[in-house]
Length: 507
Image (tube, rainbow, N blue to C red; front, side, top):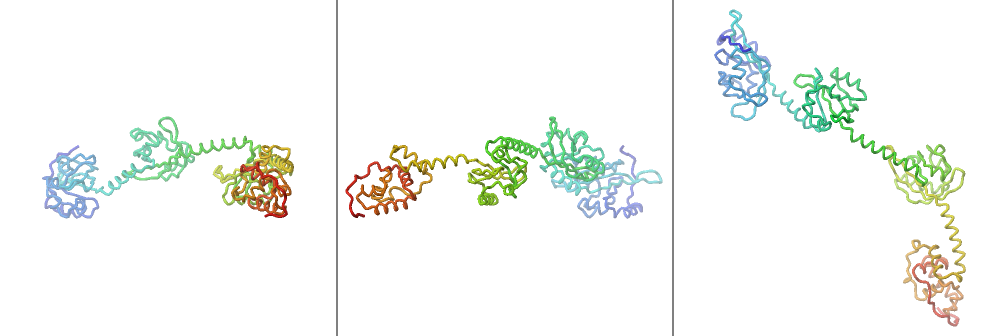
């Protein structure tokens, strides 16, 4: 309640000198005010808190002070003259912890933030108050630090929330936390850590609660935040003790692990689908480590092809198992894998569990499974195909020794089977001379060297020389291959030159 007792002046009294000597060295600012509104004295701290060095600069009266310094509350409301702490103290009012921003007259922004207390000194002889006293603390640095913290706290994209340790109520929350959880600010700031459990399902919850009670650091740990919509969010939470306005608090910070949890779930589902596909694949497949070439999984088709069960082969290197029938092929395949190269259709021979040999096309692919670097093996059994091809080649060889009873179209098809176009060299018909083309045409008709010599009227040695040059140019070494080469290019010798009488010698 304001006190209206008249004040007795201390001006030019020994009491004023003694009082000034007592308070002159205090860190707090002290201003003594006469009952008539005159500023009697101020210590150095009070002058420095106003950016002045003399009483004249501070003001000789409360009215002078109001002219030189403009005060406003922290909510930007300017103080009326009667609300100035000096005027309230002169009026006999006692008050504490009034916080005002102080602006030098003529300037736009405040320079200082002061916390002011007002009291009066009493005359013990007659119980009258004889002097008003303002005690000032400069909170500028503290408020500036709090403002910087507030700005950085709110601007920080990392979710964060602060609770007061005295009652565990939340006193600050930043936008990152609100965006992560979907909470509304006003609904958070009126609740406690028991209402919004930031340690829900924490893996070290007991330790966290103990540290919270002690005001100690809470180490990082995984927890699940309950969301307003009824869902949960996986987070990493940690707590750091701090002070806000001399009040012990706990700063909780969070890292959103929900994207990681979704990614892990997607990866797990993907690996499950891969495993099912791997097991059911009709092609023999295996999964092995890149380091050491040890197998860690085989599918049913692999066991059926080789006779090895998973217990026979898993955990062992292929070389130790004796899977490779050819040591050279094993070295080449393992060297390619060690060099980081994937194989496609590499022909190799493997040995089954009972020792039988299997011709395979081996393919490999580097994969990551469960975070480990692995190799996916695929073995395509071509044993039957190889046997069929060998039988076909032998049949073609036998047939092409006597082609007189085959039609030309059948011969051409057989020739193409024997020498596919993708295996043909780069020579063309234009690379042969006219005489070489004549000789090749007769070769395509199945004539031997003597018959060709009689047909062309040249010596047998001449024909043999022409045939040798044809072989060299087109990259073959047999008549059947030469005929296949010609037919593949649409040259079948359908109109060879007519036979003529043999001559003794002609080049």
